[in-house]
Image 1 (cartoon, rainbow, N blue to C red):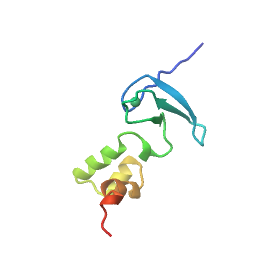
Image 2: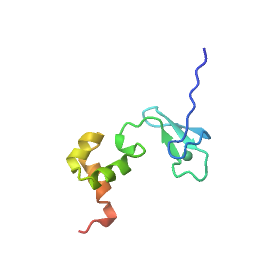
Image 3: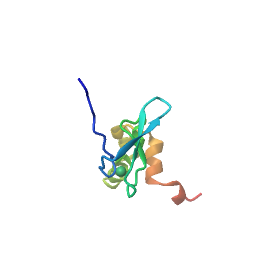
Image 4: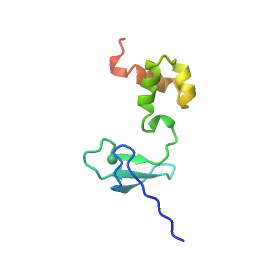
Length: 95
Ligand SMILES: [Zn+2]
């Protein structure tokens, strides 16, 4: 019995996807063939949740809805440093 899985780009939804090798933990990487797509390569599952598509937007949305840094980090399963770096990007900080 043959099994197949249709892989689509998480950013643009295109099914024009090519294999792009494996990462250091032997998880396959894919490359989107759509030239207008903002996401050039992706994996189906990420080891670190902060790399998943939509996490950054969710962090900003939760911050705008009065969720604290620790609250956001606990709910999304990312570190507090990730949340802080999304809310206060490095180039906007004053030293
Ligand atoms: Zn794409």
